[in-house]
Image (cartoon, rainbow, N blue to C red; front, side, top):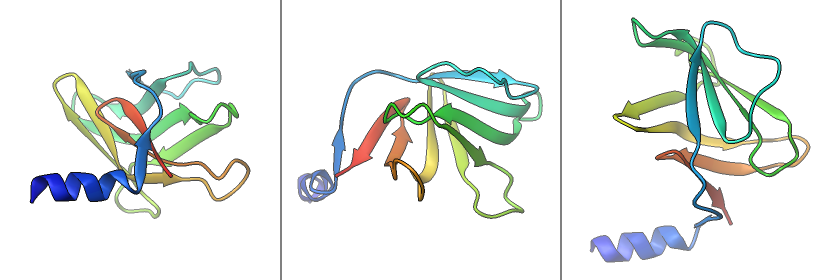
Length: 112
């Protein structure tokens, strides 16, 4: 059954590359941001993060800022485990390049 669900999921997603994202925790989001870097603004001592920032992985170089505060919508969640991190739910840009992707285990997974 697990193979079936993996196959079913592969119909809707594709991984474009194996390049991993790096995580930087900052007290204030920077003006200039690096490729393949996810910035988290917040208080790491409390594991309380307010915003995530990254460059759009499609190459358009647009900045994508994600709200991580649960009391405002839309909001995302970051899950960190040892050296990996993921963002939930997916990121779907409604303007410009219209990219739609997941950031899972430090890698970008595109929708088809």
